[in-house]
Picture 1 (tube, rainbow, N blue to C red):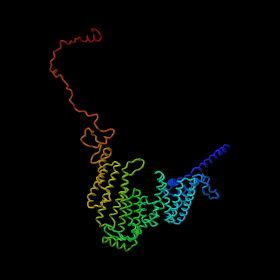
Picture 2: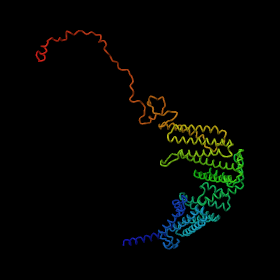
Picture 3: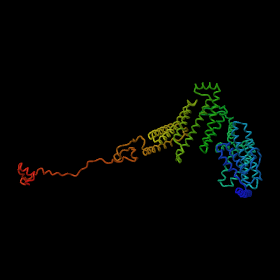
Picture 4: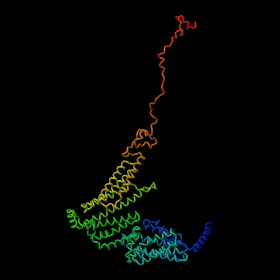
Length: 592
């Protein structure tokens, strides 16, 4: 009976809530829901399979909550959300999750299609499925129950999915129109809300812009390639579907320009370039270096350095294979070695190796600058491991190793100017490496070792300054040694102060030892006494030693020895003579 009464109470409340939901307008933050779900369930790390599983589980929960079941466990019965059934915004969310599940599956297949090309057909089918669900969501949002903002977001979402399908089918004009429609809607929505609410729409517009420029380039806009390369630099190389296509497009553009490139000049020698891969790499070298210079942050710069090194390694491998296969070339190289001149192909290999090694030097120097800035910042979190001088020592070790390989390149052994330049650069980086070794000794309070290393740094810098007079342009790309000299001078004073305050090590040229002489007795001599900072400093001797002082005089009466006293015999009583009788009298008490 009690359960029946509870059911009777609940039924009118549910009907009342249902009527209220019908009367009120329905709304759904489509873009906000999509972005939050993607960031929390795998897409932050590019895990589309995880996000697809999340969409499937959420669909199951929504269908169970809305009693929108697709048959039973024995039989499937298809069921669609219609305008008549639209009574809750969760019905719109149901269709949105179906579209997201199909889209995430397509992106998963996109990753797998790199190794299994047949999956591309399945990818297109799932993208079309996602676009179909997007169109269904747009039709549902045309209902007068749905608010205007949700209608616009649904139109933009559908346009984006249609653009993705046409982009994969390489229907550039249709894809560009769809992406432009999506971009326009999001820009209008961003202008209608506050700056905090518009951030999400602006991010979406930035994601779509590379796709639009790529479509424009394929339609025939040759100026779009410059915009795409700038977007690649600012956005970290593009994302998702655009990343591979953008890299392929840049490679194709360089390949067309490389057809007219036939030779390269380096250090006064012109070398013909017949290998296509080497032509493409050398043609794009200036663009890559300019992109590195224009990079906004260290992460982008590091990624561009790695990309350049990867291209350089592939090019060197292609030249090395050409050297191996050409037997006659190797014979001519052997003959040239006797005459002191290497072949053109070997010289090209040395040039590419030089580019690779010098890029490694610049990359490690860039990383060292970033670590130096972090090393100077105050440590806020004590539990978190911060940068240490040892990290910088490792980077400078790699730089010195690369410079050692530069000096042994074939064809440059007799180039004395090149060898002197490499030796000068080696001295600069040796000075910096020695400086951070000294810093590591300072951390463990080895003052004498650190001071010796600081002197070694100054020695290296003096050598650099003396040799750099004949090389005006050699120090242009190197760190400033003058700043290092100023920093070493300041560190030396800090080191001496730290040694005095620490009092636990030995610092030359001062002697640091426990002196038994108290401070009050050696004020004219400077000594580092560790006991002065302890709880029992040796300041004065206590208790003090006895010292001779003038005493109060003592007076002696010496005249007494020379005074003659008068006789006193008449006053002294004479003893009587009684004999033995007198003895017995005295014994028995008689005669007293």
